[in-house]
Amino acid sequence: MQIPECVIEAMASHLRTSNANVHRGIYGLSAMAEEVYESTRREIARWIHAREPREIVFNSGTTEGLNFLASQFTSLTPKDEIILFIQEHHANILPWQRLGATIRIIPMTEEGDFDSDSLSRKLSERTKIVSVAHIGNVLGTINPIKKIAQMAHTVGALCIVDGAQSLGHGPVDVQEMECDFFVTSAHKAFGPTGIGFLYGNSKYLECFKPYHLGGGIVERVAFDQAATFREIPTRFEAGTSNIVGIAGLREAIHFLQKIDWTAAQIHSERLRLRVFEILEQNPSIEILKPNNRRTGTISFIHRSVHPHDVASIFDSEGMAVRAGHHCAQPLMKALGVNGTVRLSLALYNTEEEIETLIPALQKVGRILQKNNAKTIEF
Ligand SMILES: Cc1ncc(COP(=O)(O)O)c(C=O)c1O
Image (cartoon, rainbow, N blue to C red):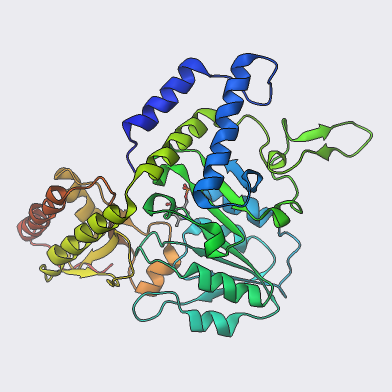
């Protein structure tokens, strides 16, 4: 997402007036930085309905959050099972694959949704973790997290939610979802890159060991005794954090709080339906799994033009779309394609911008004709 002026200004202002490290409260500037740091934690906790601010751990984003979680389960053996959805981003696959547990995969239904029946068949006392994206990054699928969490809990498994795509798409309520962990990144929610956070139920965080080791997390270090660590969440935030990123994230949360989400949803839905209308008029295009339980993340393929070529032509028309496997290769395999073109609609996109799809697609057709291109298998 692009960043609103207020977030840019909050980061610039932080650098001008409060640039110092935290946890060094002896000087005033550090106390100011600390206030930014801890007030952001409090505001995030309120925004996503965590029970308390200490359930929020700052990190560099979703990828780090998932790696942090996986690092807590190194004692799992092949008898233990971790359940993932076929649509997961590599960030929610690779950290789990490195553990000793058996990975079980939930397929999509015909319509491209999470197959809850398959989950109920796969759950057993061997299941330790069910880790699923809230919103898929390729098809925009909105997964039924509350149902998944409730099902996971019936066998005593933990429910982890990859919230990379959801923070910027509407209010999040981790208690309502009944998940145990939720990880996300600021840069998909009007904030800067390189900063994100993890929500974790404090009853589990209390049992977790430090992830990165270093300054800021210890009570005592000696060469002849084991170190003792500080309370959660500080125990998980070793080293100097991205404090200016946190100042930006705080303002991004303010920005999210001011959005009229009902109006936003109506706007997004209007844009999404118009994109469908335009794409459906083109017989060379196949939209992948279009249905009404989606966000404005729309994937399609052009039957005769490689996704990268479509994306380059769109770029020449001033439209930034991503093309390729979107870090979701298992999903590409399940869809039977090597890649897709993905349009990601944001709240600031306008109806006029959507209309530029028409000349962009016409240009794809013209260039194809000119090159007398053959149908490319991909
Ligand atoms: C669903 C999903 N999970 C995880 C990630 C990784 O996020 P980050 O690169 O911010 O760590 C992404 C990023 O695109 C994503 O869309």
